[in-house]
Amino acid sequence: MITLAGKAALVTGASRGIGAGIALSLAASGAEVAVNYSGSQSKAEEVVRQIISEGGSAFAVQASVEKPDRVKALFAALHARNFEPDILVNNAGITRDNLFIRLSDEDFETVISVNLKGAIYCTREALPAMLRKGYGKVINISSVVGYSGNPGQANYSASKGALAAFSRSCAAEFGYGGVRVNTVAPGFIKTDMTAALPEEIKKGMLSSIPLGRAGTAEEVANAVNWLASPLSDYVTGQTLHINGGMYL
Image (cartoon, rainbow, N blue to C red; front, side):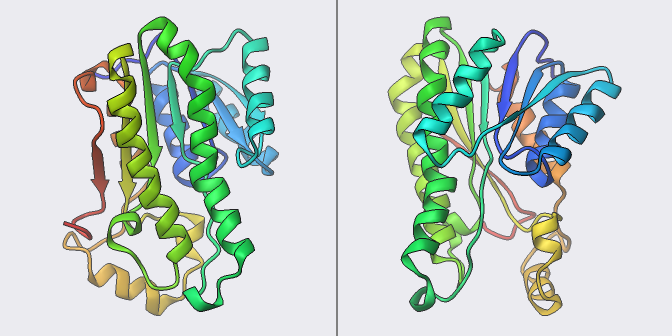
């Protein structure tokens, strides 16, 4: 049985989709969860309400993670609550899809800033307390396309592939201090983002999945929950591919 009682977890981009599923799962296992959001305050507060209604502990905290000063302010707000994350889940991410030759500099910079730099800034702020305690879990949410690539997502694929490489380097660098750094790479998951895809694209993606269906946010959250728990204390620098066989 997974228990995270007494642990504090920060989940970025947790107001909906995979992030919300992760926040709910960690809270159900006993962690106190900081539900980070950028602009969807009402949705983040709904996640908090659901956690509390199920007997868990959580609060919402606003920050856009793509700027280092905003991440510093986020952690200052957490410290003011005597909240030091034992578990950091870098989930915040966006897409700006288009063919590579049509992607603007802003399309690239925005996606890299949120998906990659946001994780870097949050990890940098969380590490000192983790190293001081001699224990910490950093879990970065990558994507199947960070490994397989995908037409129309050169910027997104680049950000997610780099995130996995960043995770491996941090695992090698901070293992001595008891900090484990791992990556979860979801495939085609049922979320608001994938629901908006054209039907022909969804059918094409489903046809490439040996298990024959899309995954759920809860299935991704289960993997994160395991990596966050003591059951995975001898695991670091690894990627869990939650994709139904879409990428082998």
